[in-house]
Length: 544
Image (cartoon, rainbow, N blue to C red; front, side, top):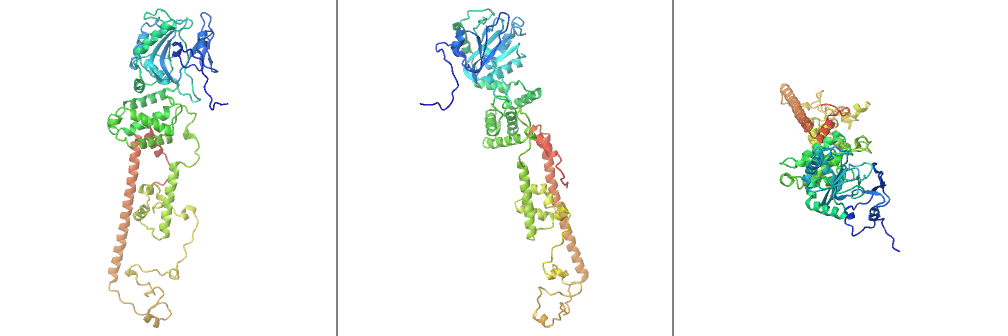
């Protein structure tokens, strides 16, 4: 016996010959109410156990209503009898509403009484199935931009502009089906006319032929109009509208790619789930959304010069926004408040750089190639593949003015290294200059503990060659002047080296401060946030 591998959603028996009932395809989570007493309102309830069938509707035991699925082929306006927009109070209000929806190319409609209470339902049918949330958002926006207040009891839009629900999927509002008790077609003079399903279908098909709304038109209206999203604060609404205003225009010249990508990324990350995504956008989903949005903006093909590396730039912006203090709207708590599981990427990079510098310094010291001068040290370390900016950030590891020795760090008294030979223990140093060839006692010391053949015969055990030393051809005063000149030249060289490296480090600091100031005044929220992080004090850093 074959067993179904997956559970299928329940369905209902359709009356294949009933075109009127086929206009309402979404039957799940339907609403129903017993027929109310005269002068009272229906007590609507939601049925979630099974879909609404055609036969239940035809039976008419209850009043029935339906909700919207993911797509729709109609929209409806609900005007209550007590609304300030009802024809009894404002005869021109419906005409103004229809005029407000003309940018969507909705030109013809059907008007019915909703019930015995004299409320009105205005239907706008169209041919192309469109996303329900986009239809509701666009219609709500256009009406509010004309001054209408979309609120229960005054004016309601179906499908409604459904906001993101952090707790899970939310249902569209349900509306009662037409042509039930108290529902009649109205003519242009607001008088009841023949209201059979046949006449309803004729009017529906006529209106559908005149309403040419398409997906491109809907997208354009949503992008260019000020969006009014429910269940967001006024500050969030203004923030979203500011982002929409900058994004909608697209590219108008060269040099705008970074700013536009930043705005698109910010809007998608913070408000993506409110604007239609099933959940907050992150990772690859966020990257794909930003790329698709950017490529669809006006002027992208003409003005954007980053077609080939667009994905790389988008990934960098996504990484930046996800690491910033921003978070998806409606989140319970900020990601920045959560305790990190381990060191951040930046902290790991800094630790690796410090380890490389410390290892290079240790190796140079071990091989006696560690110089005293600032410039020489800088050059030796850059030869090891360490960047100048990294050396500037970690001066306490190599710079003679900031370097802290192990003894200074621990406070311990470390004895000097033992002498490498007996000669070092006795204080004999290898001569480095001709002017230092004589010992203070006027004796020429033996070199490398060896004697020449002549010296061997005359050795007296005193450890000194008693043969009269040759007289130096350089007068003592000249020799002293040479030594002073050498010392002066060495001092000047050290001063020049120190000045050079200080100037270089000052330039790095100036560049850093200039970039921080530029970010602070960029009016870009991401750059401004990064600038504030740079300006925060970082512990006990030594100022140069």
